[in-house]
Image (spheres, rainbow, N blue to C red):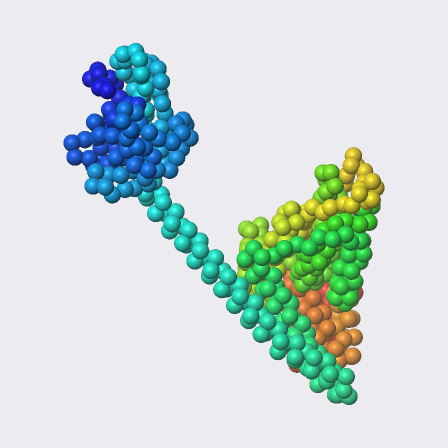
Length: 493
């Protein structure tokens, strides 16, 4: 079948391979890309299509034999060059049964003689480079998965090996604390006990992070009492908060059912981590926790939590660092407050696993509000207690601000003097009881409360801090008396 020389073939400039062949399988047209790619001596026109695609077509006596399904569906074939080497292509072959002036919008052809008319149009794309890149990508993925597996196994083994001696030390410390020892030895043992506890928390964080990164972390949802869970969280933190002189408030919406279905352990972990951070970075003021119901879809409800503190706060430009692995806002934070920088990263991933998201709103020296949402299930017996048309709306963050309380960090204000007096009294009480660890905690609070004080006051506070660190009772009492005298004068008392 010959093509009229007056035919117009815009496909000539196409990058894909375009072939036309008749019902007998004889190629009647090949564009430039096909001629170059296939490299048949003398050109492609006149050869049988089975030479190009031997796996898809066979040469019959008078007709083309094939099981190829013609149409718009793309098939993967092997295209053979003139030198009998081959390369993969993705091809589709259309059958034009009737002589029409336009064929697929690309070809204008002369009229055909009536009878057994038929023209096949093959459009193929060379995917050799694509397959090569796919193999490389697949290999890189396999290598990455293997490296991740090796890393996870290494982390698991190392943390297990670390936990064994730490727990061994902790056990012996508990035994020694039961003996009749002098105060200095007891204090040293208590410090070692605290360090072992901190080490175990770090190990737990590393293990959780490793599992989350490897995609091996799974939630274990079950039905649990929601308010009992919050009571447990409160009891775990209330002592440290009250010891530090912080007020603590927890409010729960009455619309949240008594029982919900979720991973209680992980919800406790997220709340516990946020409360620990709030306590760590707050010296004066209060910490507030609120839980509300914000949405319901069938037997699922969205719970929204807010943990607000009046601590050191975070600059807006530094807030993006909070949820990054092994990241602290700055190096001084890590030196002063400790931590691996994994806690908030783990919180973020756990919250996302529970179908929610976590955010922060903060201002330097004005405190922070961490909020997160999760989806939990509700059993049939509890679902009937829900009021779907009356969900809670989270309170505006400004509503948490107690406008009657002045900023305690601003030296010289009534609230500042009040907090200084309270913390200095607790400091001296700890010194009298020789509880030096707690004395240092209250000393740090005093330093924060006097950051904006005149230079004379700041120097006195520094001397008092050094005396506390050295456990020098006489020096502490003398420095305290002098500082107290100056504060009374500064306050007009």
